Image 1 (cartoon, one colour):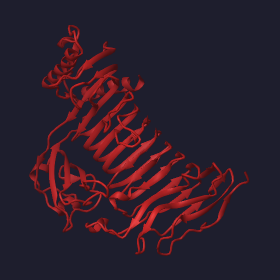
Image 2 (image 1 turned 90 degrees about the vertical axis):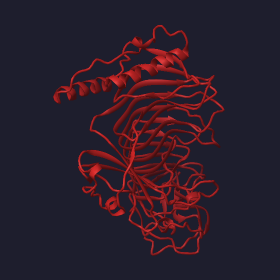
Image 3 (image 1 turned 60 degrees about the vertical axis):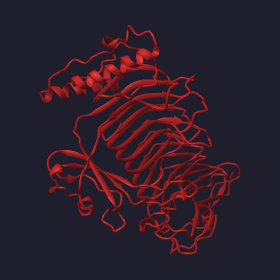
Image 4 (image 1 turned 180 degrees about the horizontal axis):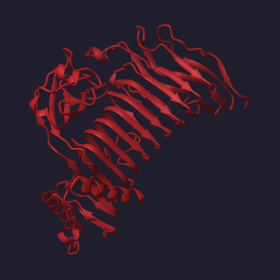
Length: 486
């Protein structure tokens, strides 16, 4: 409630300060909501209200509407969102027996544009007339595959980047350079403003009798967006391949106080609560979610922050740079990354029989990055007694030079605690399923440990469960036994 009040105050103050005319929002009650006799008619009332609000340049007023039952009709289109979508604690029960469908959408189109590889890496677009004045998102897609084929799958990986441009200057850089012979950039852009976009204060219940998936929110080509105070409830179902919240081609995105109770997934088939692709500067705070599959499915992510979350997995499937994870609790799964760059930092996190970092070997993209654990707690057993699961190192090389060589991250542990369970007596920095790599692993030079405390017994610290070639690795506690008496 406090957050909702603050948002309303912020919106009013901003409008008054900049002399914007105060326009009266419109209510679904004025578009047939009260007269609707069926759940499908109530869906159309919502849809027509939002379409009219966008045409009139006003917001939708949900005040006084506590609960709605709607059903997705066969010819349904996603309900378009305005900039400020405060649902006033609406409980929305959604039945869907028509088609897989995105319920709410905040999106705008992009136009193609010609820019050079040098401009992309240099960040100066002052000579591009379309980008010279104003604020824009520039969407980059490399049409030369970053990974030709993911092992065991029928697809590879396409790298993407998003740039925020103001008056011809980029506020950020792509994850990796584009000015290379292999890169084939396709570029598009769209204008953006500093206006704050909000989706807030709603509970969405996907009904048990639904035969198709209702994805809840689709946010695309947006800047400065917050999704907050949202609960999504999903019943047990045979449905899989969920995308409850999808965010693509966006910059400066915040998710706060979001709770996702289960997803359409199984332990052996994917389905995501939050799917993100090509996002720069994401901030995820106070997210609570657990499901049969990992709650996140993300690609092409840079400058990510997770804070005060309780979840079963965070991942960057492929192609990312810099992630900070702070005050988070992870349970009984793993965090997954590949083609990662920069720093992956965990601060004051708790790992409950959870693998902190899994490098997904199916992409075969072992790129250089650093991992730091600061004041973290590891509750480990014999099935989960390693920090990094590097899976399979093989001599198979990807065709792109950026992801051809095998690198492993440097690891730092500062003031961490290890709690031993089930008579565990080994803690490995790296765990491998197989090592068939005959060359020397690159980048890895140091494993630094300072003030490590071990409780519940003694444990031997080891580099890896299998031998591999590395260059002058500094590991001052290598093969040392650390811990207390049981």
